[in-house]
Amino acid sequence: MKSKFYLRKTFIIFLGAVFIAAAFGAGFKFGLFLFPQKIDSNSQIDANLQKTSSTASDSFEDLNEFAISNRVLKKLTENRGVEIDLTNNKADLYDNGKLIKTLSLAYQSPEDKWFQAPTGYFRVGAKHEKHLSSLFPVFMPYSIQYYEDFFIHGIPYYKNGEEVSSRFTGGCLRFQNDIAKEIYDFLKTGDQVLVYKTFNDLKIKPEFYPPVNLENFFIERRFLNPYRQFRLFNGTDALEEDYYQHTGVDLRPTLRQDSGQATNNVYAIYDGRIAKIQKNNGNDHGLGNAVILEHQIPSASSGQIYSLYAHLSHIKTELKEGDIIKKGEIIGEAGNSGFGCDNYWRIGPDGCPSADSGQANNNPPDVHLHFEIKTAAVLENPEGEKVCQDKINGPKRFCYGYTPDYPQKYGYLNPIDFLFDKYEL
Image: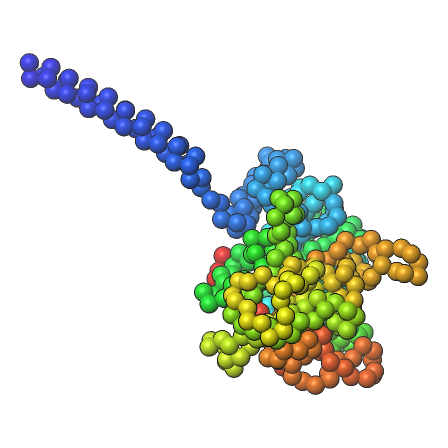
């Protein structure tokens, strides 16, 4: 009797456990339906993509379907080329508009130096399987020029064949030799190259509001980005004298506006006063529609600081100089205005539509926000007087967007360091 009782009790407990497990499973699925799990932006996507692309059995079609399903949208404006993500240390190869491979970047140049790797849109220039550096006695295997003195290449080695042991790379992007060869064999002269950063390793400081929707934008050109101004010091230790440096960051939207909602809004980073509104009227010095805000920020060293928002497609109509503006308030939308033209800045050669030839500039528009943090409410360099020049030995002028030395010497602050905390991925 007692054994039968225990058997019956065990059977009832078993049925109860099965019922509870089934109910929990159904409830869990129902919970996912009501509260779907949120995938956190590109960092998780990039991690998945790295894992996916390393599997030998994955086909090119599978990779492309994975990218589309996870909103890893191509940033290239053409169907063929390479995107190099300096934040996540990876290179994406595209052909016929499809992602065909993701490869790992080994080393990159130090950030916040004049010789940091240029970011932005470029084209493949000269290619050499064995390129002798003009600055150091080393060969760079599978060398691909992507902007002036800056290259994509493999592990450098001395003339005796010994590979360099240092990770230092003066502005170039270094890959392991087998990967460098794969990129070298894939890219053709003239193919598009995009080097960029994301916000994956950045977190907005609690007192600020981001100037754009960070999920929809990437860093196209960073602070200190080198720009070739002269050609006086090729192959010499004074090569830096040929380059000017970017005074802000250029933030470019990734996602298309196919949802019917504007994704290119630009926002005030902090409470403040509208110190200056510059219309895109030909007197804008290339900054187009621009707004400068004055802020009283206790955490800033001087307490008073200015934020500049340039190349806007339009400025919010009701804004006027002297108005008080709140943190997070819309200022306008990112655009490519400059020099009095609504669409001056382009991917490739810039310029307005030519009235003389009657032909428009058909290069894709370089829609972006040029964003600066500076010490005065001016379009030009706040400190340092007239230190820029357009021609060698020409008259000096104020600087707009670029300076001949570290921008910090002329009254600019690094916007990324100012607004964000950094952390390791």
